[in-house]
Length: 391
Image (cartoon, rainbow, N blue to C red; front, side, top):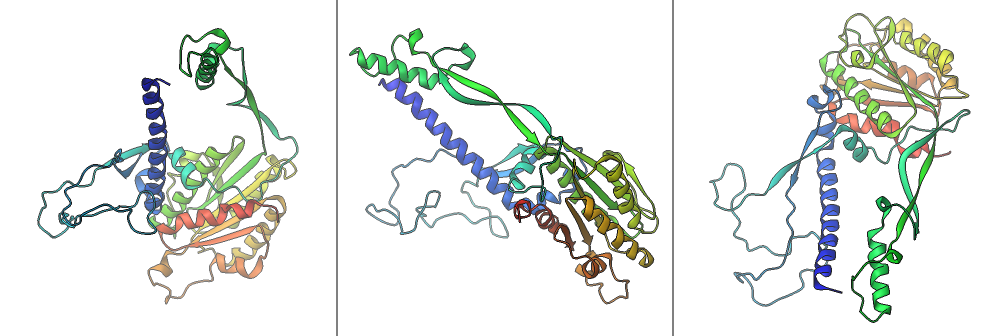
């Protein structure tokens, strides 16, 4: 094989390794900043098309070079337990880091910002999750996706489907048989190899997801922000992961109404709280438009639990009815007051406490959020992959 070909293939392998390292570094950076990213106000207030900047350490193509032997002589193999990526030597003369010390004259760490979309971020942070207990339903929509799957190799085909690697291999094999040697030389028609592809057919179960948000006066700015953040990520998760899903947005105080998505995230707060109005509207809409024989229905509600006491019993009854026509019902309660230690004040029994007393159903999911950093944990509680497995 010629030296030039070896160089090309070496570069290709190195590029693949660098790409894999880069992808791994991006995911590590996202994991390190995950809770901050999920609660980032600039992302939540955007239309979802905004590019998100992730700070990542620069990746250099590392190589060995002769050192100055400042501290030690000879060579060695490092310490036991070393693994790829570990630092294998330090000379102990590093400059002071950032902070209260004097400015150093050494090089700083190279940091750059990787831009990713909301959809890409959703893929990375929620890739192992799913809508719980998603079932196949009657009249599923059969979608011919645009994803092309290469399934075989052929000796005939269009030039656009040429498999370069297989073609080069066949050419080298033919030249070796002719005594020329295993080199690339005079590619002929009989060397050509083509990828054979087919369009994938995917079957998607119908799913309708209802978003119920308390917009009453007791939902202060912080509580409202937490609720909107949760629904922002849940809506983008559904759009990114499922091809055939309907999202229905319901806002309520003492009365409820279905609103457009853009209005749902901009709506202001006022009025008292009667959560039963939202549950009843969701139930009516399911019975009218999304029969459970054809749809996986999900209802996710968020409130501060400060519901009018006389309305609690009605909520219990409607939620029990919803569980008969829904694949799952989730309730998240925003309890920032207890986080800031306001628990000593008299308060009514929250809706969350009433649900725990009166509803015991495996597909009824509850969560309590005390601060913005809990949003990610709550998403995983409602979408954990274990819940999607058959019981």
